[in-house]
Image (cartoon, rainbow, N blue to C red; front, side):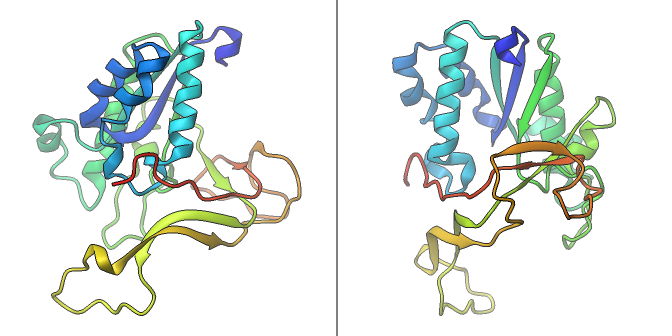
Length: 236
C-alpha cells in the first residue's frame, strides 16, 4: 500500500488519551522516536499492545514515514475525554469502550484522504456481530464502524508456540471479597495450542482456513504460522 504511494493510517490499540504524545513522537527524527514514544503509557502494559514486537513494528513504520512514505498512526483505544465518556455512558457492558474506539478511528481517518486504514486490535473488538459471550452483550468496535464505512475484519490464526500473558499463579485460589495482588499474578511466556497446522508461510485470505468453516464474525483470516512470546518493551 504505502510502497505504491498510497496514504495509510495505522490505528494501534494504545490508549486514546496518549494520542497527542504519539503524534509528537511521530514527527521526531529517528534517534528521538523511541525515547519519546515509550514515555506514553508503555510501562503500564503487560499485553501485546506494549510488547517489543509492537514497538519494533512502529519503529519500522516510522522509518518508512521518515523516508517519505505516506504513513500516519493513531492511538485510539478507550474514551479520550469526559465529553466522549458522557456520550456513550448509556451503552451496556463494554459498549462505551468499543463505541469510543470506533469514533476515535473514524475521526482520525477523516483528518486526511486515506487510501486505507489498518486497525490492529484484539479479536473481540474486531467482530462484526453483537458480542454475546460476555456477562452483558455489547456492540464491538468493528460492528459500529462498519455502519458508516466498508470494514474488512481478519481473525489471526496460528500454529502452536508461546504467547505472553498474565494470569493467576498455579496454586493460588482467589478468596471471596479479597483482591488479587501482584504477588498472585504470573506474567510471562506460556505455551499455546495451534488453531491449525498448515505447514506453510503466512498468508491472508477471505473466508476460512482450509478444512474449517467460515466464522460469521469475521470476513477472513490471517495465518501467521508458529508464534513466540514478545515481552513488554518497557518493563514496569
